Length: 178
Image (cartoon, rainbow, N blue to C red; front, top):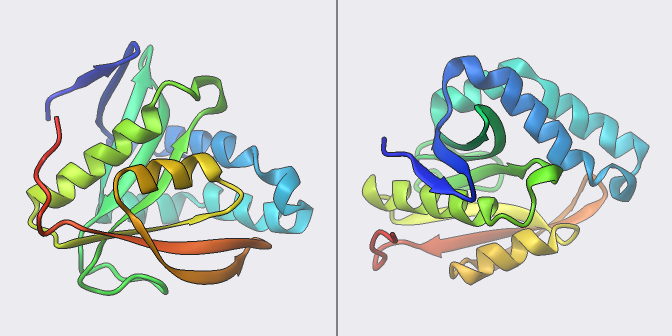
């Protein structure tokens, strides 16, 4: 895969030996919400984010795009092909999961670029729909997804004590973006 340089960050794909760095980035990025969701919910989220077996399984199922700065992963996003449904995604949908940017590297459009890479991968793979879920506690993420044309299709209720929403994007008429 070709690497793209974005604000001195190289974007490429994660490798199996990147799992510890993926965990670190997830904990740093989602750790910013610890005070919002509260101690009990953060303990559960932290446990999920730290579960090496879950990350290894997710990495095996998906294409994980990462941004590296000085060789260290600073942002990530996973694109799962259709056929990997979870509680909120239909079997024929691809999905974007676990978009995370280390707090020290926010504002560099990394989440936007990684989301675009996921969309491009889905289009290139012939996917018709790509889905994701996000929370009202993440307004910047909601803005990014909506700017790509994702539509909020359902309220998912509370997760980690916060309102979550299901979004989809119809890829049938989409072409690859630069």
